[in-house]
Image (cartoon, rainbow, N blue to C red; front, top):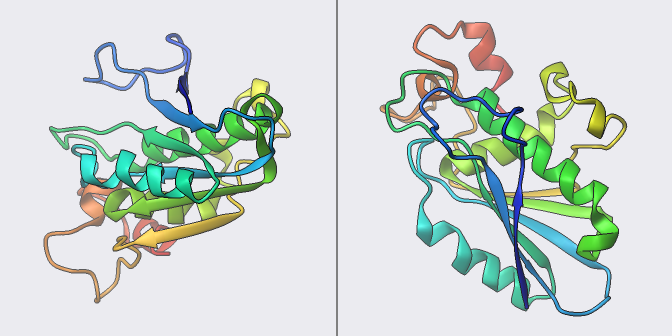
Length: 191
């Protein structure tokens, strides 16, 4: 197994208030051969406050053992919840897919077999990318122009997917979109 840390952003590209020196990244586990394999991006949950360790490396290892090259997505979180999270987290996930697809030969990944598996908040992010991949703010970087950010498959595990009357109390779109989110914004992110 080859382990590789892949930053999603250059220092001057990433500026999330309160992030300090943190730069979102992928932790890759690659088979040590030349076989072209499917990729699995694992997005742990944690309510956009933390990343749950139990939904990261162990899950990636299971997919690795099934023949995937795996990538744990360590994306933007915010323990203070003082700003909406989905836009930056979704940008992180979008960039992750584009990096894997752009570097598919080097990573020994089939460029049309990139899947995402997300839990809770990570599941919402993966689901959002699966259906909202064409959002304009996800396509602003010339370096990745023309490289699709669309997932080829998505596995959602206890993900927040509805912002309507079936949303569980205490979970919510205020964390994703901010406390002042309009009904239109909630509906747009209600997958």
